[in-house]
Length: 255
Image (cartoon, rainbow, N blue to C red; front, side, top):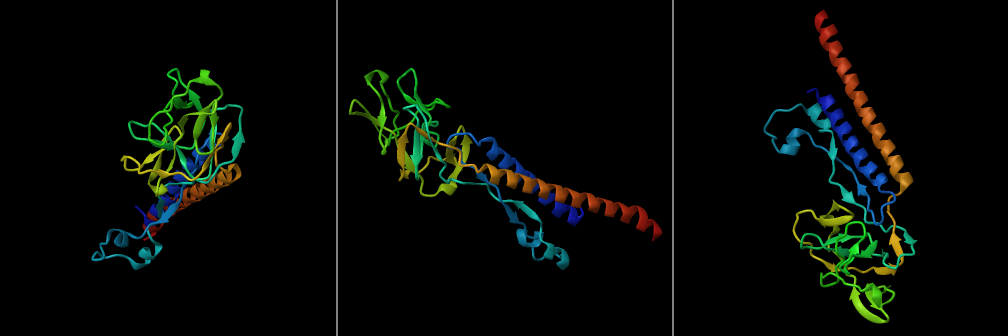
C-alpha cells in the first residue's frame, strides 16, 4: 500500500472510532450516573521503531513521517455529575468519591446509578437492572416497606422508625484505571478478576440522583471535530489515489 494512503487511513479509522465513542456519550446524556468515555489518539512510530527491527533497511525520509496514528486506550471520566432532587425515597445520589456496590456474578460491581427499589422478596435492588444493592459486607439488603418510611443517612445507614435495618455500601478502588464499563451502568475489572475495594469517601443524599456527567456542548463539538478529521483524511486518500492513477496511466505511458 502507498505509505501516504496508509497514514491517511490510520487517521480516518482513528477519527471514526472517536466518533463512535463520543456519540455513545451523547446518547447517554440523560442516563443517571453515566460517566463518559475519553477517546484519544496516540502517535504511531515507524515500523523499525515500533517492532524494534533496526537491522532492516529503511527510508529515512519515510521514517521521519512516522506511522500515522492509532486509537489510544479508552479512559473513563469519573467527574461528578449534577445532583437532581426526586420524590422517590429510595433514590440515592453520591456526592464525592465512591460507588454503590452491586451484585454481579458472585463478585460486586460498582455503579453510580442510585435509582433503587424494593423487589417482591423485600430486597433493595437497582430499579433498572434488578441487581441487588450490597451492604459494606457485600450482603444484600432487605427492607420491609410496612415498617414505616425509609430514611437513608449520609453514610448509607438505612433506618425505619429510628431503628437501623441495613446500610448501603460505599466503596472505591485504589486505581480506577483498572475499571471498564460492562453496561447497565456497571463498572468491573478489565481483567475479569474480583475488584479490590476500599472505603468510599463521599456522602449519600436521599431523594436525589446523580445525573450524567456528559457535557452536551463539548460532546457535540468533539463529534464535529472528529467528523471533520475523518473527512479530511478520506479526502487525502482520494487525492493520493488520483495521483497514483495519473502516475500509472499518464506519466508511465510518456516514459
